[in-house]
Figure 1: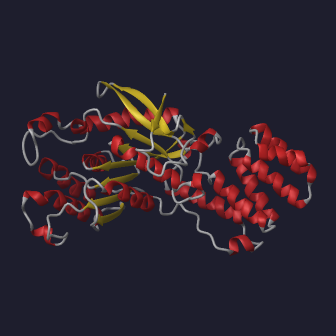
Figure 2: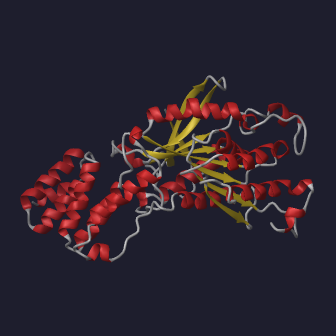
Length: 411
């Protein structure tokens, strides 16, 4: 696989992501797959969390991003910044798969049209390949990603504009392919709102347990109109907004049948600018239960079982996200989160709690050296020189560290 290097001009909060090479920020890799369904070679952009190189047992949810040229960098930066790589644990660490376009109109429109609103001859003759494109994702791309990268079966699809209508098409016609949908200012006006009408009917006739959908809408209203008054308008200039509001009524209505849905209108953002903010809100919504809730007493009360509490939280997340034995693993607490909590209670001389945390990481991530170093610090704080030396040596056998080497040398 070739290295994907995007310079600072393209990066969005990307500094923590990867080591810098030749004054560039490396945020992923370019992979490639030949599609028999599309009859072409397709490049894909893949970002894998840095922790994967140290933690061989760990697996990750996957976010598939349509229109990768526009959306990939922002999604990667946001997820990395708000996951445990920076001490934040708002989202889980995730693999991000960006799908750049080769023929956007062909792939991101669900039906073929020859004329109508905003349809030119070029758009019409290239339209309607959405089902074939979705089959490529389902039968070729997803198996390819799952065979090479450490993935969980929990998948999220992100689409904006034409990509948004394809995300809705996946929900309506391929409901088991993804568990999360981020739908941003979708082009639901397409083909005289055909898919929009299908969506209303399908949501009434199907159930969506464990499926989350976030719908974001930009302000594309004519001057002087708002989301209430536009409903009575019938001009072509408002059909984009009216179609999204109708979709909102479908997904937020009482007939959504188990679908966990949320909607937000971005009054200050245009069709072009809305994507980044909506993605941020969508990931917060989809993973709203991920962050560990703590209180001061969890760290100060010697009787509070901190390690079992953390373990139970992630076992519950495993169940919530539908991760099964087929995944070959459960959702594990991030190594940095556990080490940071352990180091915090170590500073309060809660030695038993600290040891339980470090040993949890050693069990979950036996090739990661940091927990062994912290365990050595724990033994040193307790005056147990023999076990401190053994722990530091074990850490160094996994990865050389000047700091750990210095600690061992002092003993």
